[in-house]
Image 1: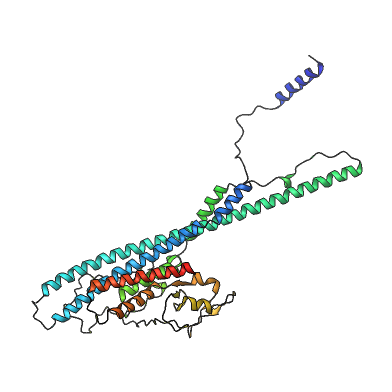
Image 2 (image 1 turned 120 degrees about the vertical axis):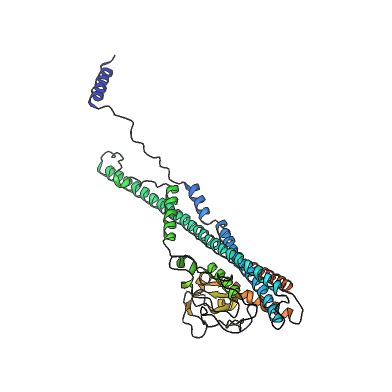
Length: 408
């Protein structure tokens, strides 16, 4: 064996004896793999995916369907109730035995139907709030993916800048060494040249989703639903169907929920111990009745002065305008303009139209009832035929609105 090999062997033996043996395996370090160009491009496509918007539209359509169903069943009930009251008036001056038993059975059936309607309406309201929760979750998910894509893009830009600066410093060091006749210094990496730790995209997604969920859960029920256009539409449909056109106005959104967060919902079923009279009230109201100003709603747009076709109400001042008329009224600039209703000081912007305004389905139903009434005037039509015509007109109106949206 050569002296060099022996010397190396002795040196290696000395180093091994000087270095203490490890007590166990080294600590595991997570693998890091930054997103490449293909992965960033896929993330960009995911952040602009139109399927999410389609899901949100379907959720909004479902909320509208829930409101229409609640309105339909309550209107059908009140038509039946009006028919019963009409029969009572006919029997008012007749002997009590004539038809009384049949009317009592009909009234019991209607009372039972009213309780079923209240249960179904409460269930629909709970499902509606769940749909709104899902809608917010989808919107937040889109925001989260967009934020992650922005962070990944910015991180890659910073890494590119860091590499350029490192190469520039290396080139400057080489040029200085060559000009001084010195050997080229070895390439060394200081703390500033080390790239930052790569954050897991999946971990970032989960953390941001939890943050968004926590923010949403901290909102009050009024902030979640009271200012939501879909919930306002549902509430108005339910209120108008339960109270009728001559009933009190819909309370302010601040009164839609109790202090414990429970929804305050109207009912049509008679209260316990309350029995409806066989004859119509002679105007003697009970002590529980509260005098409330009646709501008078015009079926004409205050801007176009024409009968509504697509009435859009807003959640700020509750005034209603024809969609095309209010869009023409709002300037395309970002400047806010005052509500066109006389005496109203609320400000609106064209860019905020989708957030502030919503299609007023309750007013659409009033228009449909008006059209039904004009068609049945002079015709001998029973309750079933009247209800069927109302539903047919409602479906026709909904289809025409959808066609106009597709065409526009």
